[in-house]
Image (cartoon, rainbow, N blue to C red; front, side):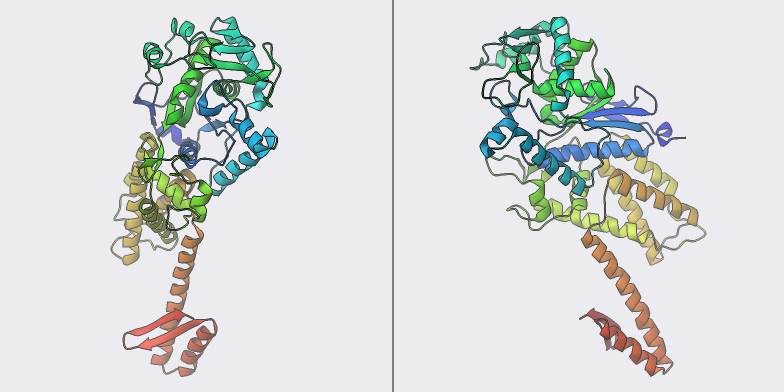
Length: 495
């Protein structure tokens, strides 16, 4: 029996604005698509927060025994500046500025993206498709949308007809926007004269002569629109309808709204059952912005080479910090917050080490079964990692009580505690002990070993075996450990 059969998950669905019981389309299987990075620069820390949230979702679904196909794309073409339909491709612009090929830009920042995620202990997705690898699929999708009467061709470019679509469908249902309001609030922009209406968006753009990245199509040599790639790749690998689509809150409109419209226009059905959106990451109470200088990238946070934080922070601490807030909450990145998370993370890791050494008794003074269920209840409630962490710390407190002799646990309950703690700390939250935490663990082990030798030396002195007493003291000194005798007992220091 798989764990998912006894665990009912509720997911906050952005489409309906409420928590809903999760029922996958195919029992025991989950299809999940998450919008990946546009690889024209180092990955943004806010994007890392989003990907970390869905890494945790992926991990928990796998822990429950679901067979998960997790698709996260790489945008390597078609994403224009300011998320618009006019202007320069972000990757092409970077290539022009650095005087290198666009695919060199793509390669450099795709490698950087993978390195950062590996450092932060992400699981790789099941499939990581690229926009440039799916040009044919995108062209076929455009052809279908045009044939169905929801797109039009002008001067070699193809645009989605939002007004025509809205006559029979509800454009704006994800972001809760009405087309009438969008029309009222939209100004006609220069360079958009090809469009029937400013709200229409590009499915295919005819390439200007200077545009490097281009492909042949029935309409022109050009490139696909940014929104189109996710519709093409998600439905290719997950089917015309799939379970979960995730991304950052900033993608809800227009990107995800356009995805829904494209799929309904081409396939006649809404593509996704559960839309999930991770909230924004702030830095010291303000939105991250390159223009204001209020920004820090993952490399700077990990190395400590920045103007915002007092030290470098380990990958496990960053993951722990992120998990202390719900993925749907705004997360404020501060030095005080990270320092507090570091203490909490180290305390949790100390608890994991303590698991290996506590003794057992005939009775348990802690309801381990109830505690275990509360761990699952937290994650089943829209992946509530803050409640999960608080529940894990209940177990850490209990372990310390066992160590002090004020609580007890049976061997059977200890095994349940070990299995559950390992599952949620390592498998679900994806935490790993840092070198600092490992150093603390080694120091604890060293202290235990030296204290045993101090006790043996004390016994030797009581028995007037001064030769053995001196030998223990001298050999410890040779190993760099100095003993100091006083009226209060013997202590040691490292020389």
